[in-house]
Image (spheres, rainbow, N blue to C red):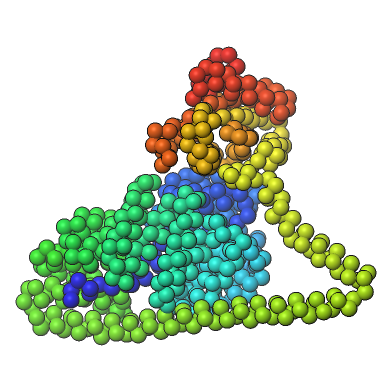
Length: 612
């Protein structure tokens, strides 16, 4: 009976409300801010420095970008387990002029609302924000992110019905952007809440969707977290083997970018799953690592690490050590209402007491734990019913709206049939204008983006460059331009196929975006050729950044051929050498071919000599 006493659902609740898992999105339309969000999803600790650089390079007059960058920094610190209040205060001081109904204003109001200690006050504050949330544009990243926030914060104060409603709205609001960072975030939040309704098939589907998007975008930190929570979902269903698979995958993901905070959470999951599986020897190193990394963290999850460590000591035959570990947790709970953690610790204590032949004390401890556990079980059942009810009502509402839309369309067709020709033509023209205006922005974005790599295409790159250079005025150096061409790319296509070639192009584009600075402009010039524009940068500094890209590319390995090496040649020219951007690009192109002639896999700053 003892191998089931610590409920995985209890740790899931703690995970969902801990800083490492309370990831949020800004919902910004600013490309610099969005790039910083993606960097945070890959590695929050490394992203902090990138965001600081972006803040330093931002014009103080651009208050919106600055405020949103400070919000992004607070999220990166939060997700890496560091204090995050200072940048949030800075965002409030800068973002005040945007007003409470602006996306940024709503974000800050939500953060302040959740800072209240009383659940009733939090609920009242969240309710006051709802009208402004509903006024945000449908289909916008802002509405997806703020809907997910409302879902998360309502879920945290056990308002499961409202949480399910907002989570569903956020998820469906992102239907037109199914591979976006915001869609993954909304799917992840909805999966958490659907788990409360015990609809595990749907929650697995949502977790898998979020994980697939995160992997596609290279968001290693978020992917590690997604695997972690899905693993606890399996553990809650007594599927320990699948839980271990997810926890091990989460651990590998966390180690790949060196985040010790995420590593500790994955170790905690492995500890728990192996204890459930009665694999004490395999559990021991994970339990010890989680205990070492998570205790004294100031979070509730450190109590789970201590409790699981105590259970490991019981399995090892050290009940005295287990009682020593559990005593501070239970004594600290004397002055507060019993929590899920208290129940877990009390059950572990009862097991240790039985092993020391203190049966009466053990029986009393177990009775106390069972009494409180029943209350929590009943409340959890109510939450599950509320979640299912909210989902049912939301689906019914969608069906009614669809039926009303069909009825409205039928009435509209009837009216049009009896309108005279001239009025019909005017109505048709009006509809066409409305559709064109509605999709103009979408078509413009498609026209400016390379569909394979997601980078700006040639036309968009030149426009961005001219805009950036116009803002520099007569400053020197004005800019450096690098043309980059992948070496032996045709042989890659010939040997491994065009699908492999496309994969190489996409991965190289991702590497470039990770290595350049926020102010640099990256685009696909054509075929296997790329361009990078470095504003206010001399040729040598530009060459250093290009070589950073080269070093990162050299470590990339591909499943289609582990022996394939991603190498490139590059030519760099300074705009100070030429009068026009086009002439400077031509000069960089000549130096690119000089690099090819000199043996490839190098950067040339001159046409004949001077390779770097």
